Image (tube, rainbow, N blue to C red; front, top):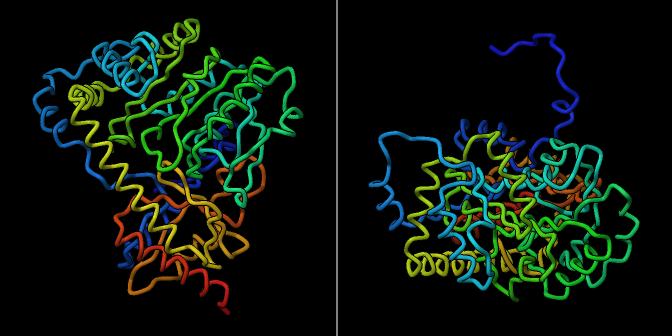
Length: 403
């Protein structure tokens, strides 16, 4: 039994934001105990198996002693990962890449490396929610440049961003392709961000973990822009359905950043050995991983189209622009408070024993916007996804007409 100890806790612990992706989990668990089937559209956990060729080979690589590795990560993995980058047209050396414990650690290392307590960074909102938590952890204020769901979260200028900059502004944070919106930045948008960063001598922290999942347009990496003050966050979690392996990377051309990150890496000792060994097996067979990524991309495009088709013309779920990448979309619902609605879907609603869990989008905003929006992760197969969107639409109708 968990009791109240009466102890005093840190302000940071009390103020640390809850994850909008996981905060309703207890209601989903209770719904399942009551016998309901819950369609999880709240979390970016792919249902697609990891590469089978890598899993088979990995079984023979597990050592008798699961030992520490270098704080930078295994050199074999770093070399293979750098070769992958060159294969997609980004010229880096393995020494430019540090293996991290998932992309989450790369986010924290990046923020810690370029900002002190009391400094600030600019984010385009909505933004991947973990940036809010890690910014709080690192003592960095996030300043929001708002993008509009009705414009599909795109922009043709950065008017108004100047007012967010002061003497303590250190960086612009960009997620491309975007979680939670599914937006892929155009070359013109990338150039606008680079020009702004250059003018104000700011770092760009570019989260590019979904770069392989682009359905329309072309992916432009900030590493290829010629601007030096770039730190890229990468991860194998979603690319290869290896979320639990916890293998990410921080990439930069700036030697001082990499040397500083080594000290942070030494403090946490090393990234996980078994995850790195699995990643080596993934990257060793280029033909196989390219085939795998193409199949996965095609599958997510199909699922994206299902969400778009099932919501198109709907008054209950409004998606203003078809998402161009990743496997997420932010939709406006015909409700005032999406979080209360999402909770109600789990506690009070089902159709034929099935209900849907979504992530309230307000948790992806720094400001108080997004209260009528949700993030949908299309990580279920097409049949389940089609059914889930139909249930979600019906849920909105019933919720609005309830007594």
